[in-house]
Length: 247
Picture 1 (cartoon, rainbow, N blue to C red):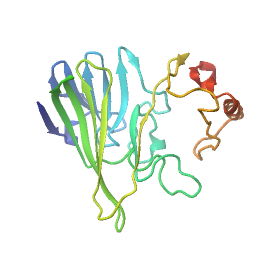
Picture 2: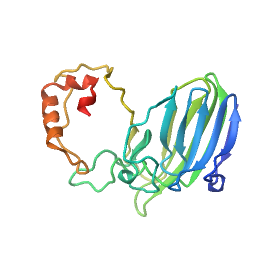
Picture 3: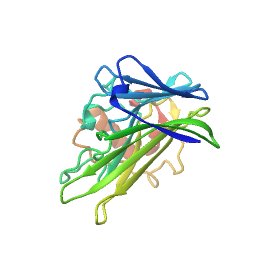
């Protein structure tokens, strides 16, 4: 079973509105005080908040009473296409033509055009499969440059009735008549647990880890940060434990 409900901005108001329910799952539309449209998907364990027309970002995630989203300067999303003017999402898509921090000779925005892309279409999905009932959000962003690149991006995020792990995917289709460069990263910003331990497949010494030495232009490092960075070059394993004093 699978279905789709096309979303319209008229369905979103300051007062919350339930758009649908299925097997303990609920979809609720609302507007942030900043005017950004949001859709909250709920299951018995928690919820996520998705921005259907602003990058299809997963702005927030809360499960078992714990907020999983990083702490930032932005308590609410701001209507913008500049990522640094509304940097607070739990998850966002990066790319698709370029991504990462632009260097001195780059002219692309931070992490590309997808993070805060103005989506032309958005829809609510619902269905049931081997993992149980689920609700999802998807949409379409069409990128077009005259005499240049043209593509269509369609991301999807699903929340299942009995899971706290999100199912996230994206389809990017080249609509131009020639090959297109493609770079993509799914960027997740977790709120770290104090003294939590990072588990990874690689080792923790200088044979397996290299600390980035260049500082992105949008970061203003303090002397303490630079000193800490220098210490990590010799001992990257110090990042294994998320100590509050290192924040």
